[in-house]
Amino acid sequence: MSTASRLPEFAGRLTARLPRTVDARVRRLAVASLIGQTLLVVTGGAVRLTASGLGCPTWPRCTDTSLVNTAEMGIHGFIEFGNRLLTFALAAVAVLMLVYLWNLRKERRDLFLLALGLLASIPAQAVIGGITVLTNLNPWVVGLHFLVSMALVVIATLLVNRAYGRTGRLATMSRPALPGVLRPVTAAVALFSALAVMLGVVVTGAGPHAGDADAPRNGLDWDLFSHIHAVPAYLVTAGTLFALVLVFTRRITGPFRTATVLLLAVTLLQAVIGFTQYYNGIPALLVGAHMLGAALLMGAATNAADVAHSSPTK
Image (cartoon, rainbow, N blue to C red):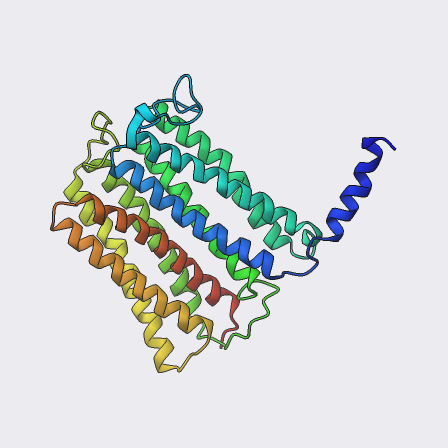
């Protein structure tokens, strides 16, 4: 029997061993996607904050003659190439997720499309990363690279929620009815969170942590845009506090209560880090923590809005 004639038989055996329900393997891969996308934000921040943005001075190779970093490149090459390598790990997780969802691609189209979106974004991120290097770390391109990562955190959060049956059309988790006002409030909080992150990119592009000593800055007033960046952050805090007041006064329990408390905790932590770095000369370590906080904020705001939208109203 030829190899070609054996392929359908092999494919049939493979698909027979894949899940036909959303099981622990699918859920673990969803969580791995979310952790990986968040970790990518952290490693990307480490690249910029250690001035390793041009640790690999070319793309797609690390040097003109090597695909990987070399010993002569030192710590900067290691940090930059490590960030690139994480992208391949995330691609592997996304491919594996699609494989495990193959038998469920019709009945769980929501999961399949979210996983497909994560996979499709990886080459896009690689190209943007390449343009970042080739433009000598242009701050607007660097900012776009970061914003795409934020969007991937949002997608991965939705994937986790649906994989665990917390939200979506096929949710299995019991959710108490919420006051109708919470849907637009949490949607607004998620929107203002995204706006705060986008303005944070502008602030970063004007600040001192460029990723390389010779990298250009956007030329804007860093102090002015720091204050503008704070405005949507105040609105996020106000909206979250409003939602939390309703949670406790209406005695709301379940996933939304947990999501709101988590969102407030992340929002307050991000505020503390932001104010501390502003009044202490924006040290690199706190900037990195603020970048991680931005990813956590987008995940928490997405989670709260997703749970509110999927819950019945009263």
